[in-house]
Length: 179
Image (cartoon, one colour):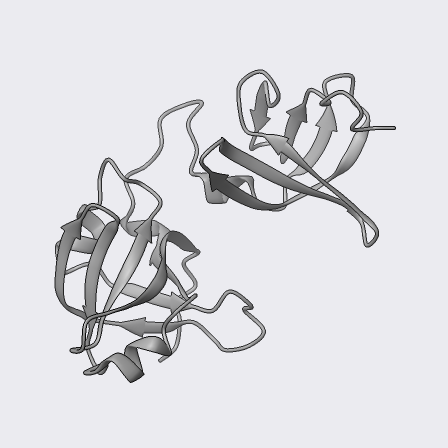
């Protein structure tokens, strides 16, 4: 299936198969509003973690339900645990155009990818490669060059400004970051 020109925005990723009928457990990125995954009407795209591996593929969901660990989905065409296992690690994405527009000074996290990271004093650090989350909170991975990268806590203290028009984020260096 051909992908539209619309940008794909990740809304979750597939953790593992669940049960024997082809369902998968999805970790959702917006835990307050999983409706895009639950309504069964939203066009979803499967995107591999390594986009050079396979092209995005549009999929349909035949069942979905919220569980404590995320969302259980049944992707049409995957009828058993073995075929569901093939989906492990894929991201689930939606087309940007179906998301509500952002307010002024708001953005989707995907908007931060590839922005230039500058210190609060204007020193160029690198570019935003990835956004991650763990129990300690959100993190931004900044790539300096092929030998250097660093993580910045994604908090107002360490990322005081995002300027989408200038395609930059400001980073307050963590002690030892620039040593």
